[in-house]
Length: 65
Image (cartoon, rainbow, N blue to C red; front, side, top):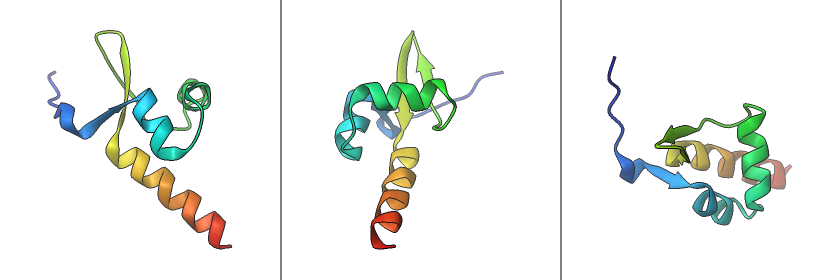
């Protein structure tokens, strides 16, 4: 089975952490606990942009409450 993923739709852990305003260690911890969707390509962990956008929305919603 082959799944095609556009690499332009993926962010490195460092990029995702910067966008989310969180340390890289936190993003790795979320990945280990299955709290976020991740993709591993060639041993490197990536986070889909859609997942980062979802987390930003949650962060904004909790800030408004």
